[in-house]
Length: 139
View 1 (tube, helix red, strand yellow):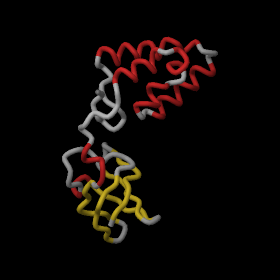
View 2 (cartoon, rainbow, N blue to C red):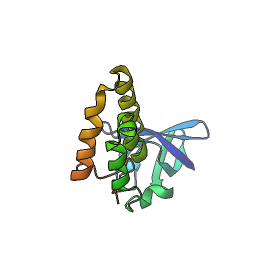
View 3 (cartoon, one colour):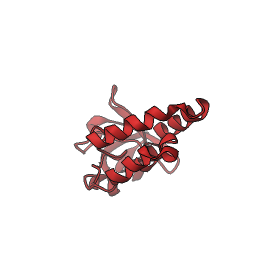
């Protein structure tokens, strides 16, 4: 069966896969990959009742090591006032929740959240932020 990981708890090492509106639970012991499960990853699995076994990743998740996003563009988006204040660099890198928080902070503080994108621009320049949301390195 083919499904999508909907949740994964690192503490209990259990997760849930959704396939055709049916949910299947799985444990890390049924996971066949070296990397931990990530939410919204496509997987191939065997469904038995409400339990998934032999869970294997499929699709582009396996090829995440190639750099796709540009560090220079992310730095520009962070340092440019209009895009930086509204989390443009975070949107670009795929960190949508942080971008929404940054937009909210900027809106409710009437733009005084200007220090946040500046600091993140420095972190991008120094290499402390060096991957996109999918774990791929920046070019």
